[in-house]
Image 1 (spheres, rainbow, N blue to C red):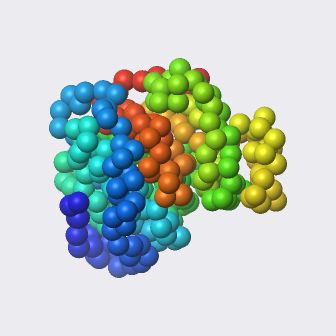
Image 2: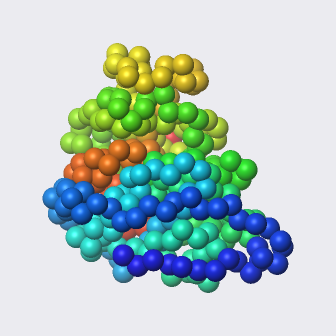
Image 3: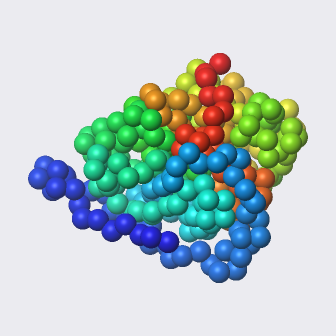
Length: 292
Protein backbone atom coordinates (compact mmCIF):
# COMPACT_ATOMS: atom_id res chain seq x y z
CA UNK A 1 0.00 0.00 0.00
CA UNK A 2 1.49 3.30 -1.01
CA UNK A 3 1.92 5.85 1.76
CA UNK A 4 2.05 9.59 1.16
CA UNK A 5 4.43 11.35 3.54
CA UNK A 6 4.42 15.09 3.17
CA UNK A 7 5.73 18.10 5.06
CA UNK A 8 3.53 20.68 6.75
CA UNK A 9 1.89 23.16 4.44
CA UNK A 10 3.97 26.25 3.87
CA UNK A 11 0.83 28.30 4.37
CA UNK A 12 0.31 26.83 7.83
CA UNK A 13 3.95 27.38 8.78
CA UNK A 14 3.89 30.94 7.51
CA UNK A 15 0.76 31.77 9.47
CA UNK A 16 2.21 30.39 12.68
CA UNK A 17 -0.68 27.96 13.05
CA UNK A 18 0.08 24.64 14.72
CA UNK A 19 -1.66 21.53 13.44
CA UNK A 20 -3.20 19.20 16.00
CA UNK A 21 -1.22 16.02 16.56
CA UNK A 22 -2.11 12.90 14.64
CA UNK A 23 -2.91 10.14 17.15
CA UNK A 24 -3.18 7.30 14.65
CA UNK A 25 -0.06 5.21 15.02
CA UNK A 26 -1.72 1.88 14.24
CA UNK A 27 0.26 -0.58 12.20
CA UNK A 28 -0.98 -2.69 9.30
CA UNK A 29 -3.97 -5.00 9.54
CA UNK A 30 -3.37 -8.44 11.02
CA UNK A 31 -2.66 -11.05 8.31
CA UNK A 32 -5.40 -13.36 9.56
CA UNK A 33 -7.94 -10.54 9.22
CA UNK A 34 -6.70 -9.69 5.74
CA UNK A 35 -7.34 -13.30 4.75
CA UNK A 36 -10.92 -12.98 6.00
CA UNK A 37 -11.36 -9.87 3.84
CA UNK A 38 -9.95 -11.63 0.79
CA UNK A 39 -12.45 -14.46 1.21
CA UNK A 40 -15.33 -11.97 1.38
CA UNK A 41 -14.42 -9.63 -1.47
CA UNK A 42 -16.98 -8.82 -4.18
CA UNK A 43 -16.18 -10.67 -7.38
CA UNK A 44 -16.84 -7.69 -9.65
CA UNK A 45 -17.73 -4.03 -9.53
CA UNK A 46 -21.27 -2.93 -10.37
CA UNK A 47 -19.96 -0.49 -12.99
CA UNK A 48 -17.06 -0.42 -15.42
CA UNK A 49 -14.75 2.52 -14.69
CA UNK A 50 -14.75 5.10 -17.46
CA UNK A 51 -11.03 5.61 -16.82
CA UNK A 52 -8.37 4.64 -14.29
CA UNK A 53 -9.58 5.86 -10.90
CA UNK A 54 -7.52 6.84 -7.89
CA UNK A 55 -8.69 7.46 -4.32
CA UNK A 56 -6.89 9.31 -1.54
CA UNK A 57 -7.66 7.48 1.73
CA UNK A 58 -7.26 9.72 4.78
CA UNK A 59 -6.61 7.95 8.11
CA UNK A 60 -5.55 10.85 10.32
CA UNK A 61 -7.09 10.96 13.80
CA UNK A 62 -6.88 13.93 16.13
CA UNK A 63 -9.44 12.36 18.46
CA UNK A 64 -10.39 8.75 19.16
CA UNK A 65 -8.51 6.17 17.08
CA UNK A 66 -10.63 3.31 15.80
CA UNK A 67 -8.68 0.08 15.79
CA UNK A 68 -10.55 -1.12 12.69
CA UNK A 69 -8.89 1.55 10.51
CA UNK A 70 -6.11 -0.74 9.19
CA UNK A 71 -8.50 -3.52 8.17
CA UNK A 72 -10.85 -0.93 6.69
CA UNK A 73 -8.05 0.45 4.52
CA UNK A 74 -6.98 -3.06 3.53
CA UNK A 75 -10.56 -3.93 2.55
CA UNK A 76 -10.93 -0.80 0.41
CA UNK A 77 -7.57 -1.40 -1.27
CA UNK A 78 -8.23 -5.07 -1.92
CA UNK A 79 -11.69 -4.34 -3.36
CA UNK A 80 -10.11 -1.98 -5.84
CA UNK A 81 -7.47 -4.53 -6.80
CA UNK A 82 -9.96 -7.41 -7.09
CA UNK A 83 -12.45 -5.54 -9.25
CA UNK A 84 -10.22 -3.08 -11.11
CA UNK A 85 -12.48 -0.24 -9.96
CA UNK A 86 -9.72 1.99 -8.54
CA UNK A 87 -6.37 2.19 -6.78
CA UNK A 88 -5.59 4.03 -3.55
CA UNK A 89 -2.99 6.11 -1.78
CA UNK A 90 -3.15 6.53 1.99
CA UNK A 91 -2.20 9.62 3.97
CA UNK A 92 -2.34 10.93 7.53
CA UNK A 93 -1.42 14.48 6.46
CA UNK A 94 -4.01 17.11 5.62
CA UNK A 95 -1.51 19.28 3.80
CA UNK A 96 -2.30 17.23 0.69
CA UNK A 97 -5.55 19.22 0.59
CA UNK A 98 -4.31 21.63 -2.04
CA UNK A 99 -5.15 22.00 -5.71
CA UNK A 100 -1.94 20.48 -7.02
CA UNK A 101 -1.96 17.33 -4.87
CA UNK A 102 -5.70 16.70 -5.12
CA UNK A 103 -5.67 16.99 -8.90
CA UNK A 104 -4.40 13.42 -9.30
CA UNK A 105 -7.37 11.91 -7.42
CA UNK A 106 -10.99 11.17 -8.28
CA UNK A 107 -12.21 10.97 -4.67
CA UNK A 108 -11.10 11.44 -1.08
CA UNK A 109 -12.13 8.75 1.42
CA UNK A 110 -12.19 9.48 5.15
CA UNK A 111 -11.67 6.18 6.99
CA UNK A 112 -12.90 6.74 10.56
CA UNK A 113 -11.00 10.01 10.84
CA UNK A 114 -11.78 11.98 14.00
CA UNK A 115 -11.78 15.62 15.09
CA UNK A 116 -10.16 16.90 11.91
CA UNK A 117 -10.18 20.68 11.49
CA UNK A 118 -8.58 21.68 8.17
CA UNK A 119 -7.10 25.13 7.73
CA UNK A 120 -9.11 27.67 5.70
CA UNK A 121 -6.88 26.98 2.69
CA UNK A 122 -7.32 23.22 3.04
CA UNK A 123 -11.09 23.61 3.37
CA UNK A 124 -11.25 25.70 0.23
CA UNK A 125 -9.19 23.18 -1.73
CA UNK A 126 -11.32 20.22 -0.62
CA UNK A 127 -14.61 21.94 -1.41
CA UNK A 128 -13.30 23.06 -4.79
CA UNK A 129 -12.15 19.49 -5.49
CA UNK A 130 -15.56 17.97 -4.78
CA UNK A 131 -17.67 20.66 -6.39
CA UNK A 132 -15.62 20.44 -9.58
CA UNK A 133 -16.97 16.94 -10.14
CA UNK A 134 -14.99 14.69 -7.78
CA UNK A 135 -16.13 12.58 -4.84
CA UNK A 136 -16.10 12.35 -1.05
CA UNK A 137 -16.51 8.99 0.69
CA UNK A 138 -17.03 8.65 4.44
CA UNK A 139 -16.78 5.45 6.46
CA UNK A 140 -17.97 5.29 10.09
CA UNK A 141 -16.30 8.13 12.04
CA UNK A 142 -15.96 10.35 8.96
CA UNK A 143 -18.80 12.40 10.51
CA UNK A 144 -16.76 12.99 13.71
CA UNK A 145 -14.94 15.91 12.06
CA UNK A 146 -15.50 19.48 10.86
CA UNK A 147 -17.26 20.73 14.01
CA UNK A 148 -16.01 24.26 13.30
CA UNK A 149 -16.55 24.02 9.55
CA UNK A 150 -20.22 24.34 8.65
CA UNK A 151 -19.79 23.74 4.91
CA UNK A 152 -17.70 20.64 5.53
CA UNK A 153 -20.20 19.16 7.97
CA UNK A 154 -23.05 19.83 5.53
CA UNK A 155 -21.06 18.27 2.71
CA UNK A 156 -20.51 15.09 4.73
CA UNK A 157 -24.16 15.04 5.77
CA UNK A 158 -24.12 15.45 9.54
CA UNK A 159 -22.14 15.51 12.75
CA UNK A 160 -21.64 12.68 15.23
CA UNK A 161 -23.77 13.00 18.37
CA UNK A 162 -23.22 10.00 20.64
CA UNK A 163 -23.57 6.32 19.78
CA UNK A 164 -26.41 4.90 21.87
CA UNK A 165 -25.96 1.61 19.98
CA UNK A 166 -22.49 0.51 21.07
CA UNK A 167 -20.16 -1.96 19.39
CA UNK A 168 -21.79 -5.06 20.90
CA UNK A 169 -25.32 -4.05 19.90
CA UNK A 170 -27.15 -6.03 17.25
CA UNK A 171 -29.51 -3.71 15.41
CA UNK A 172 -32.06 -4.01 12.64
CA UNK A 173 -31.34 -2.10 9.47
CA UNK A 174 -34.13 -0.74 7.28
CA UNK A 175 -33.75 -0.28 3.55
CA UNK A 176 -35.34 3.12 3.00
CA UNK A 177 -35.00 2.43 -0.71
CA UNK A 178 -34.89 -1.35 -1.29
CA UNK A 179 -34.55 -0.84 -5.05
CA UNK A 180 -31.75 1.71 -4.90
CA UNK A 181 -28.74 0.36 -6.85
CA UNK A 182 -26.39 0.84 -3.88
CA UNK A 183 -28.73 -1.43 -1.88
CA UNK A 184 -28.89 -4.12 -4.57
CA UNK A 185 -26.50 -6.26 -2.51
CA UNK A 186 -29.20 -6.73 0.16
CA UNK A 187 -31.73 -8.17 -2.32
CA UNK A 188 -34.59 -6.10 -0.93
CA UNK A 189 -34.32 -7.59 2.56
CA UNK A 190 -33.65 -5.69 5.76
CA UNK A 191 -30.91 -7.19 7.91
CA UNK A 192 -29.33 -7.24 11.34
CA UNK A 193 -25.78 -6.20 12.04
CA UNK A 194 -23.61 -6.03 15.14
CA UNK A 195 -21.83 -2.70 15.13
CA UNK A 196 -21.59 0.70 16.77
CA UNK A 197 -24.27 2.88 15.18
CA UNK A 198 -24.19 6.67 15.28
CA UNK A 199 -26.76 9.26 16.13
CA UNK A 200 -26.41 12.51 14.19
CA UNK A 201 -27.12 16.15 14.87
CA UNK A 202 -27.47 19.11 12.51
CA UNK A 203 -26.75 19.52 9.68
CA UNK A 204 -28.12 15.95 9.33
CA UNK A 205 -31.40 16.27 7.48
CA UNK A 206 -33.30 14.41 4.79
CA UNK A 207 -33.61 17.79 3.13
CA UNK A 208 -29.82 17.73 2.70
CA UNK A 209 -29.17 14.14 1.62
CA UNK A 210 -30.84 11.02 0.27
CA UNK A 211 -30.93 8.43 3.07
CA UNK A 212 -31.06 4.91 1.67
CA UNK A 213 -30.42 2.86 4.85
CA UNK A 214 -31.41 3.70 8.42
CA UNK A 215 -32.11 2.03 11.75
CA UNK A 216 -35.44 0.19 11.88
CA UNK A 217 -37.03 1.71 14.95
CA UNK A 218 -40.01 -0.63 14.57
CA UNK A 219 -37.72 -3.42 15.75
CA UNK A 220 -38.23 -3.67 19.55
CA UNK A 221 -34.60 -4.45 20.42
CA UNK A 222 -33.28 -1.67 18.21
CA UNK A 223 -35.77 0.87 19.58
CA UNK A 224 -34.93 -0.18 23.14
CA UNK A 225 -31.19 0.22 22.42
CA UNK A 226 -30.79 -3.27 23.85
CA UNK A 227 -27.25 -3.67 25.12
CA UNK A 228 -26.42 0.00 24.49
CA UNK A 229 -27.13 3.22 26.34
CA UNK A 230 -30.73 4.48 25.88
CA UNK A 231 -29.92 7.63 27.86
CA UNK A 232 -27.81 8.82 24.94
CA UNK A 233 -30.73 8.85 22.51
CA UNK A 234 -31.31 12.56 21.87
CA UNK A 235 -33.24 12.56 18.61
CA UNK A 236 -37.00 12.68 19.07
CA UNK A 237 -37.94 12.01 15.45
CA UNK A 238 -36.71 8.41 15.33
CA UNK A 239 -34.58 9.18 12.28
CA UNK A 240 -31.21 7.49 12.53
CA UNK A 241 -29.69 7.43 9.06
CA UNK A 242 -26.90 4.95 8.32
CA UNK A 243 -26.14 5.32 4.59
CA UNK A 244 -26.78 8.26 2.32
CA UNK A 245 -25.79 9.87 -0.94
CA UNK A 246 -25.90 13.49 -1.95
CA UNK A 247 -24.70 15.77 -4.75
CA UNK A 248 -22.23 18.50 -3.84
CA UNK A 249 -21.92 20.95 -6.71
CA UNK A 250 -20.90 18.79 -9.66
CA UNK A 251 -19.49 16.17 -7.28
CA UNK A 252 -20.90 13.35 -5.17
CA UNK A 253 -20.87 12.24 -1.51
CA UNK A 254 -21.33 8.69 -0.19
CA UNK A 255 -21.39 7.99 3.54
CA UNK A 256 -22.01 4.85 5.62
CA UNK A 257 -21.76 4.78 9.42
CA UNK A 258 -21.11 1.04 9.63
CA UNK A 259 -17.46 0.19 10.20
CA UNK A 260 -16.55 0.25 13.90
CA UNK A 261 -16.17 -3.51 14.26
CA UNK A 262 -13.52 -5.38 12.32
CA UNK A 263 -15.99 -8.00 11.07
CA UNK A 264 -17.88 -5.38 9.06
CA UNK A 265 -14.97 -5.41 6.64
CA UNK A 266 -15.30 -9.11 5.87
CA UNK A 267 -19.07 -9.03 5.45
CA UNK A 268 -19.63 -9.53 1.72
CA UNK A 269 -22.95 -7.67 1.31
CA UNK A 270 -21.61 -4.68 3.24
CA UNK A 271 -18.44 -4.67 1.14
CA UNK A 272 -20.64 -4.72 -1.98
CA UNK A 273 -22.61 -1.82 -0.47
CA UNK A 274 -19.40 0.13 0.08
CA UNK A 275 -18.12 -0.65 -3.41
CA UNK A 276 -21.31 0.55 -5.08
CA UNK A 277 -21.20 3.76 -3.04
CA UNK A 278 -17.53 4.28 -3.82
CA UNK A 279 -18.17 3.88 -7.53
CA UNK A 280 -21.03 6.37 -7.28
CA UNK A 281 -18.71 8.89 -5.61
CA UNK A 282 -16.08 8.28 -8.27
CA UNK A 283 -18.60 9.10 -10.99
CA UNK A 284 -18.71 5.64 -12.56
CA UNK A 285 -22.03 4.41 -11.15
CA UNK A 286 -24.95 6.60 -12.15
CA UNK A 287 -27.50 6.13 -9.34
CA UNK A 288 -30.35 8.32 -8.05
CA UNK A 289 -29.08 10.96 -5.64
CA UNK A 290 -31.68 13.71 -5.96
CA UNK A 291 -32.91 14.95 -2.60
CA UNK A 292 -36.52 13.91 -2.18
